[in-house]
Length: 190
Image (cartoon, rainbow, N blue to C red):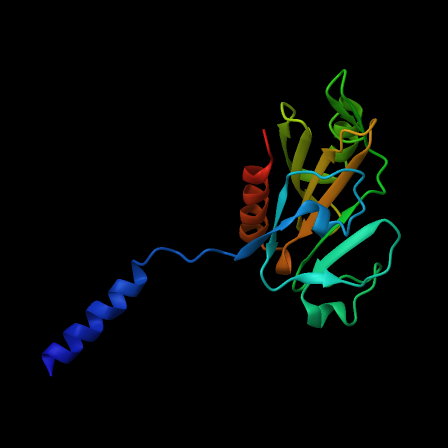
């Protein structure tokens, strides 16, 4: 009988010391597919999309939404599923990229960053400006929702055009948001 309890005790302690599970499983989706062919050129970027998400038919001009199919059945552009999270991308942005000055006007210039500080906290900016398609990744805590928000802006290489991606993690889970955004950063071509 003691050996049964000892074996059970060892098994229980082994699970306690096991490596923590990944906070989210993703699959890589080519950005041109993610954006439903809306980009003016092919861009060699894979977007890490949570495996349970699929492209949704949420209607909003210039936008492409990804979420769980069961959430997509009732989602609208005004009412997105924050409980289970969602991703979206758009070519409809007020941000432009100035290649000569290597600045995304409207997002990483000093004036825009100062405005952002008034509406969010814990703002993290990571720049990737050496490749063919310069990008800037942002993560922050929204001042209105108190939830983490993630954005990426990338230059298309056509004039000063930019597109963006955004991710809202399920239930505002920062561990999931950070994991997806870390994978996206690793996928940005040099």
